[in-house]
Length: 207
Picture 1 (cartoon, rainbow, N blue to C red):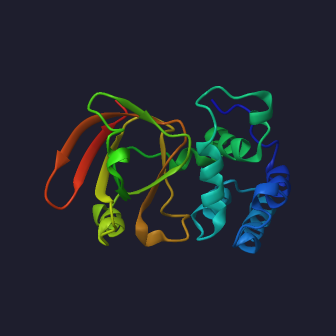
Picture 2: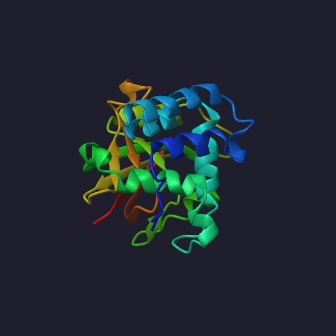
């Protein structure tokens, strides 16, 4: 569990904007703007708005989170900016109003090896954030262009637990996408795997 959030948004802004892993990331001028706005307004939800912007920030963040060992963090890990970023989202009361339950979709092109990771009855956990949509048609946009050696996959998530997902459509930079953000370490069970000629659909539930 993430247990060491930033002390405040001043600290969050300073540490994120000076993070070594982000120094050559594209779009950091925009991220710096969001961080300053979060600090000025004392509004942690702007940290999520920064995540949704089309910059390298969300890519680097998720890449770094994906490398962490699941729930076996060292003291050094707990002090890393990307762990603290998740922690402030996980613990701040400002995110309670974005809590969301329901069905949401994610579309992606995967390899056969990726697909073999899903087995009915298995529990799946991701260290990183997962962007999904309440609108299935939005998810399908990510699988409409064929790619060599890739299989179109739709994952359907049934979210029933508190703090598993946030409805960020009102604060996203792309409001039309109806984005639901599944938080790191949310656990889902593979319920069904359905195949047809066009794609594969996997249903997962946190129940």
